[in-house]
Length: 198
Image 1 (cartoon, one colour):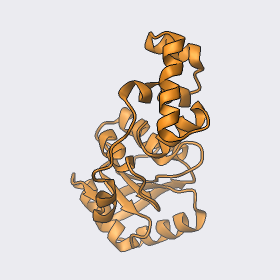
Image 2: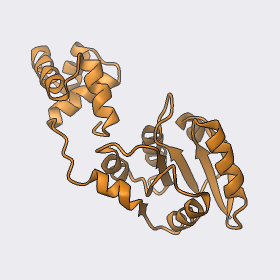
Image 3: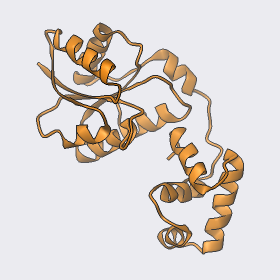
Image 4: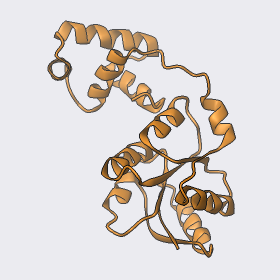
């Protein structure tokens, strides 16, 4: 039996998926929760994690990164309602092995889980097409300062972490805000995270 943990903040969808996946002969749902932290906190053995991309608190991508940092061989499938540019690339770079829309029927999701468990990858063709050819407009340094902004660092903290002058950090932040049409550095960091760049 393939042991699956499912995390999704939409209670109705999650409970329906749990019920439908449990009907499959090859799959047993060993736990489920409403956010990414639930997946990290689950103490039982899990073969495949199925994580919603957008959840409050710890979202699916951050939860996947944490799970894969613990175990680089962890099998993670992301489900999403909207495929934002850059997210697919970030998920695959993190080691996520499956990426499917929430509209995927439970029976098809079960087959995808079986493939992932067997060591394959699966990316929904439409989600893949939406991710092709979209380039991040930010430089690596701009991404660095936005990443640290998102982690709660102020300008002085970012400067110290990156061994830069505070004025240089402000310049990077200003450039990133301009490129993303963001009102402040926090909005720019949020936008970059939503696109999957950080």
